[in-house]
Length: 86
Image (cartoon, rainbow, N blue to C red; front, side, top):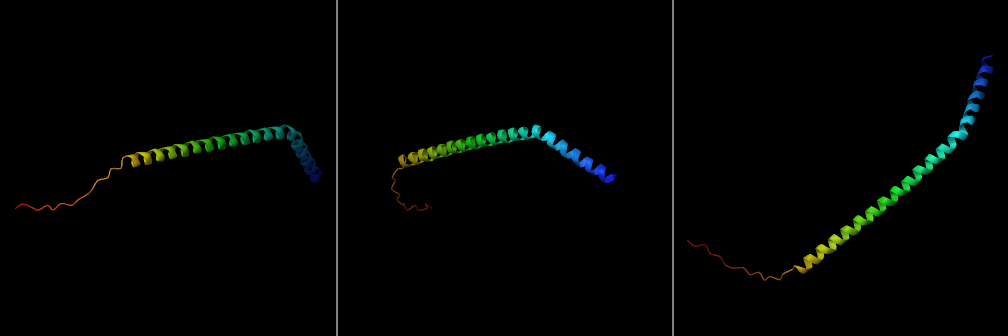
């Protein structure tokens, strides 16, 4: 008798799983699609922001190199003998 009850419970659980499956499966697929599209969007945004940051850094360093190259002044350095006056 216990075996028969166990079999009925197993069959009931399988039936319940199969009855709920058509409802849950589309929801799971929709959730996975939304998460996948969101991750692709975030990846695209991060890549674009990194390219912008790289471009800004390149522009900054190019500007600083140009400023440095333009402001170089040739100065002759000569040592002078300084004597302490006593």
